[in-house]
Length: 172
Image (cartoon, rainbow, N blue to C red; front, side, top):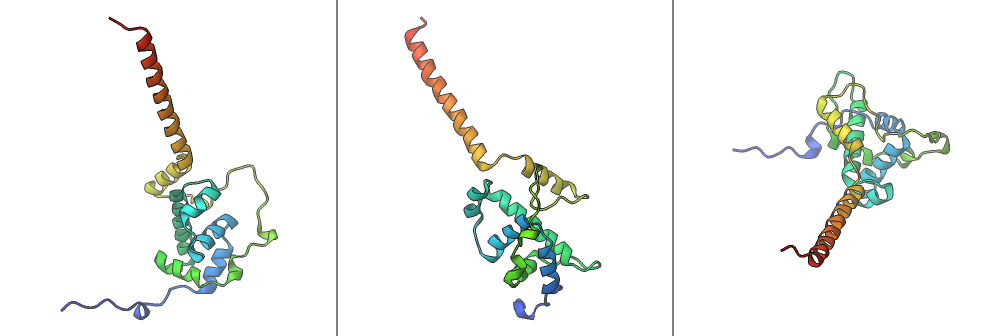
């Protein structure tokens, strides 16, 4: 006879403390903290945030996944494997509001260099490095659609101009 799945409450409790997770969240840069606060805690959809942040929803989802992975690695004990991302995600929703607040003193000074939401690790497997290179070099959805629109517009103009030229200069 098949066994029924173990209820969620009967499964092993989370392997890290909420206090330690709160410390790790406070250590995140303000942009990453805001992304996690809006998407994980408040349930704001990526497609709703993307126009305001002038990026595409895929990039936001990718950055959020990277931030959750970084938090999972940070809260894991040195000998233990990182906890599942679903466990970290559900624990983030239970953190108090004061963990997510950013004071004026915590804001970084304005910089002319580009800052990533999640800092790049020094040693990465090849797949992560390729994804990172793609995400940083890929145009936003708006730029890609603008390029497609321009290409279609140029093609339409060529067709109209070619038809007019061929009507005035019949070859025969």
